[in-house]
Length: 229
Image 1 (cartoon, rainbow, N blue to C red):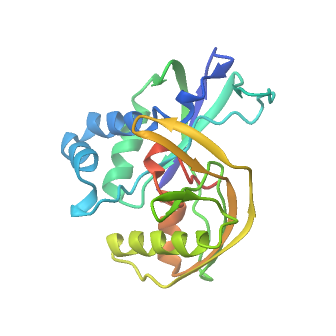
Image 2: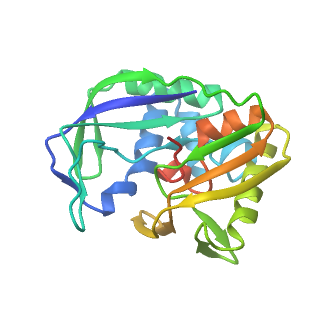
Image 3: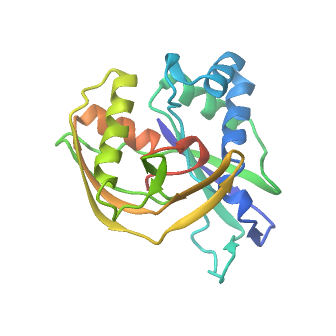
């Protein structure tokens, strides 16, 4: 399940450190309000004994914002999207957001205007083209790499297989990068992240494509990276 949280704000910009930096804390706070046990497991260990956290979230997105050089501009209205392929986790997030009047996103207060379930995509043919609206993170030899790196497709395919194994889904997968955006670096609570937005074709079992659509692509999805449009 994935859903969109419509937001409003008086802030004209979001500091760069607050674009992705608060995402993890926001997710855990929402889940904790409904199920402290799940929140503790995800925060301290990962899901079901693994290191992965099957949760995705976007940074606050403002389609009507006027771009400005060197700033992350906002608009009066925007949205945050989030989801999870694990029904128990998704239900916690949805219930928590439905009961909130505002979300504190770092130094910015976002008023919750409404919550809308997003329609499911049709992946029955086993092929999906995913447009990531936030940078997709992949590592090779301990370093972040970009979509035009020769190891990126291999690394992303490995990450998707790892997610499939956690969810008990078929893990055969092929990845092809179709387009990529510019390199971006963001500071988060535990250091920095480097990646780029991308348009990526993934061939896999329909159930796995559904899960990726609800979870996100690549690493650190709980910090707002790799969210799919």
